[in-house]
Amino acid sequence: MGDFYGLPGTPGRLMKQQAPASAIEVGFPLWGRSIAWLLFLGPFFFLSYGFSNHLAAEKAVTDAVFFDWERNIPFLPWTILPYWSIDLLYGLSFLLCRSRMQVDRHALRLLTAQLVSVSFFLAFPLHYAFERPHVDGLFGAMFDALMGFDQPYNQAPSLHISLLVILWVRFASSVSAPWRMLVHLWAVLIGLSVMTTFQHHFIDIPTGILVGLLCLWLWPDRGQSPLAGGDFVPTSRHFRVAAYYLLGAFVLAGLAQGIGGAALWLWWGAAALGLVELIYARSGAAGFQKQDGRHSLSVAILLAPYVLGAWLNSRWWTRRHLATDNILDDVWLGRLPSAGEMRSGGFSTLCDFTAELPAPRGDWRYTGLAWLDMVPPDVSQLIEAARLIESSRIHGPVLVCCALGYSRSACAVLAWLLLTGRVQNLDAAEAMLREKRPQVVLSPAHRAALAELTHVARAGALHA
Image (cartoon, rainbow, N blue to C red; front, side, top):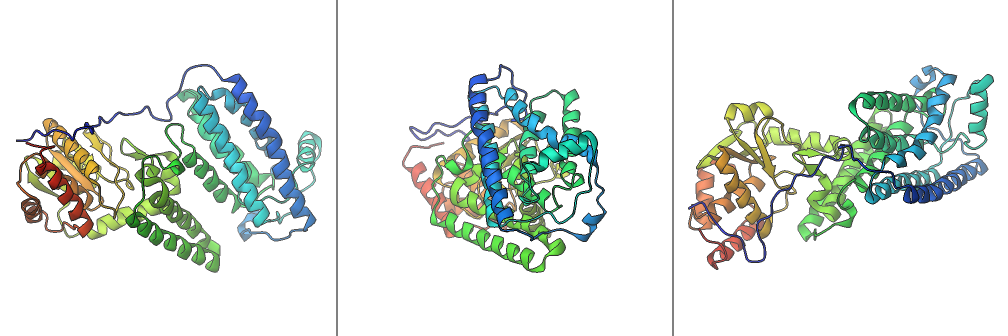
């Protein structure tokens, strides 16, 4: 008991840990490809940005969005230096790319930021509301040069900030630790300069950050773009859940727009729910970009309101129940734990089946599969889950978890019980599980997937 074999043609997959995207890559710049991209991006930037500026000037746009406290922001002429420096960093950033994919992904991020921002400039043109004081000398000449191209339009989202986010990540991930602090400090200075040079209002900054992060999410350093979909084939269940999130996004957006003021931050939540809708409808669990228990930087920030809500929801529904329950042979079932719960429970391995929540870090082994919430796993996912659980047992007690420990992780444990021959049928497995953890929730779709798994096992393709 405890050993089982994979289906013919579907051998067990090994979990290979990719190098983190922040790892410094060695090699030489791809001069030809980088220059080709710059020769396209440079003229495209000036043409598209200038065109949106020209249209706004022709229409004499006067609409502005700002807060009264912004009148107290000082005008600091010297900050035109960090403001202008982004142009130099834009070109130098390509020297840090060490592979064809890295060059292309970096260029696509910059191009996407341009396309998204200019689309907003054309659809919702805004004007900078304050008058810039007169400046003489070198700084005055730099402002004059800027005004020769950049009029007080093209406000939200700030393209300057969107490009900064992309360049910041590129530089920070490509330099050693001693230089990284300098990169961070200069990037913050550039970010502040958009306000101290009287180029942008505050609202332009968070919206620009969102666009920059969206570009990072769309074009990751490794793997496919989330929009490519890969092997993911959405079902009617995926589309139904996606519709709920889309509705939530519209509700938050309506509240933000209707209330205004501090409620404008609800746009962040609306953007988060909109992205989750896209993940369910298009990219699948891979869209959460969860690696070694952690989301990518872009997902961690973009989806922060959603992730916080999901975490609070998990704690609310499990507040009156035990966090974990011992099922059989040192395999435990529970909610995604805190680091303290992992240590106090003495678990050697955390087997995580959430896609939407980051896992705690510690001196335990981490494994798992990113499964979407409210969507039952298929047979191949159940087989892989059973393999992960069984292979983890050799290291000591295993905690199998999902957000609540009621459905996704319960299905994984049921698959493990069935495929290792510890129980004879699904009814017996479910009865055992409910005896140990009565809160288990299995929908008809979950039971159907497990029943299909049972038929596969009975056919002899899997056996103890």
